[in-house]
Image 1 (cartoon, helix red, strand yellow):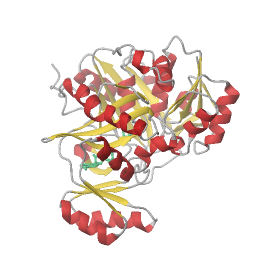
Image 2 (image 1 turned 120 degrees about the vertical axis):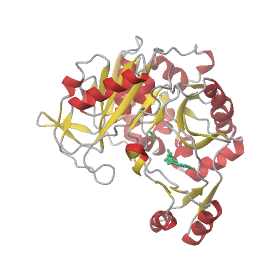
Image 3 (image 1 turned 180 degrees about the vertical axis):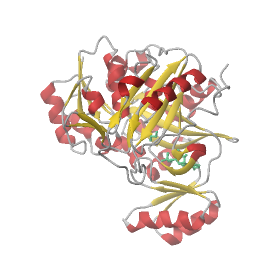
Image 4 (image 1 turned 45 degrees about the vertical axis):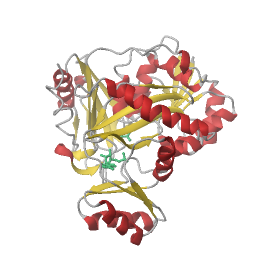
Amino acid sequence: MKLLVIGSGAREHVIVSALLRDPEVESVVVAPGNAGIAALVHCMPIDVTDAKAIGELATALEVDLVVVGPEVPLMAGAANELITRGIPCFGPTREAALIEGSKAFCKEVMAQAGIATALAHVCTNVAEAGIALDTFGPPYVVKDDGLAAGKGVVVTSDRSEALAHAGNCFAVGGTVVIEEFLDGPEVSIFGISDGTTVIALQPAQDFKRVGDNDEGPNTGGMGAYSPLPWLDESVVAEVTEHVLQPMADEMKRRGTPFVGVLYAGLAMTARGIRVIEFNARFGDPETQVVLSRLVTPLGQFLYAAATGQLKDFLALEWHQGYSVNVVIAAQGYPEKPVLGASVSGLELAQTNPLVAVFHAGTELVGGELVTSGGRVLSVTAQASTLEQAREHAYAGVAQIVIAGSHFRSDIALNACGTDS
Ligand code: AMP
Ligand code: GLY
C-alpha cells in the first residue's frame, strides 16, 4: 500500500511512525511534514488549505490512501476532492468535518442524535451574550464558533473577561457559543469511523492549559497519557454506544457520512458523561500516546475505515502498560512563540529505547534544527507503569535544550498511584 499523509505536527510524526510498522505499507510520503518526519520518509511542500493541490499530489503519486491529519485541509474540502478522484481518504468531507468547524452545528447534530452535552446558547451580539452568561452563571464558558486550534475557548469566573472574548469574536464577524460549565475530569476518546461502523481507541487525557495545576490560557495541548488507570473499563463501550455510534448514525442519516476520527472530548461529571466537543481528526498530543501503544497495523485499519470495511475488522490489539507525552513549547507559546531558536539534545533523549521524540514545530535551517512553531517537540515514553512512563518521559525532556522553552511538570502526575 502506498500512502500520502497530510500535515506537519507531532500527530503526523506518530501517525507515520505507526504506519511504517505495518507490513502492508510499502511507502509513505508526507506533505508538508517537518524536520523529524523528513528523517523517516520523503516530504513534499504543499499548501494544506489547497484541496485541489492535495488531490493533484495524490493522483501524481498514485497512492492507495490519503490520511489527513489536521482539520484545516478537511474544512478546505481535501476529502471531497479525493473522493471525486476515486482515491480513498481517511478523513471526513467538508460537510462532515463541520462537526469541528462549527460548534453551533455540532450542538445541533448532538441534540438530534440525543447525545448528552452542555446546555448552550448561540449568540451573535453582546446583548445576547450578556443574557446567556447570566443564564448559566460562573464559571463562564465562551467559545468562538469557528476553527481556533483549541484556543478559541475562554473559561473564566470573570464576567467582563467572558464578555470581552465574546466581543472580540463579534468584532471579526463571528458568533459564539456560551454554555454551562462542565465539572469533572476530561477524557478524549477517538472513534475510527467508516461512515457506518465506529471502533473506539483506548482513552487518553490531554492537558489543555499552558501551566502546571491547569493555570494560564488554553493551548493546543501540553501533554497526555494513556490509558487512564482511574477510568472504569466500561466507559469506552458506554461512549461508543451513547456518543460515537449515535453521532455516526446521525451524520449518515443527514447524507453526510463521517469517515475518519470522531474525536469526543468528554467530561466525566457527577451527573454522567457529557460531550465537551467533537473534533474531526486525531487529537494532538493524545495521538502520540494512543498510537504508540497500538499493535494493530495502522495502514490496514485506516484503509478499512476509508473504504467502508470496518464491520469485518478484527478487535484491536494494544501493548501492555502506559504511555506519557510531554510537549516542549517555544518561548512565548501560546501567545507569541519565538521561532528560529536552536533545538538540541534529541539524540541524547532517545538513547533510552523507551523514549521517542516526535517533532512538531521544527525545521532545518542551514543544517541546524530550529523552532518553527509554538509546540516544538512531543517527548513520549512507554513503560509498564504510569510512574515509570512519566519518569522516562521527563528524563527525555531534561536532555533537550531550547532557549526559553517551557513544559508542564505535572503531566499524568495526579493519575500516578491510581494504577494497580
Ligand atoms: P474545546 O475547544 O471545546 O475543546 O474547549 C477547550 C477546553 O475548554 C476544553 O478541553 C475544556 O478544558 C474547556 N471547556 C470547554 N467547554 C467547557 C465546558 N462546558 N465546561 C468546562 N470546561 C470547558
Ligand atoms: N488535544 C486537543 C486537540 O487536538 O484539539
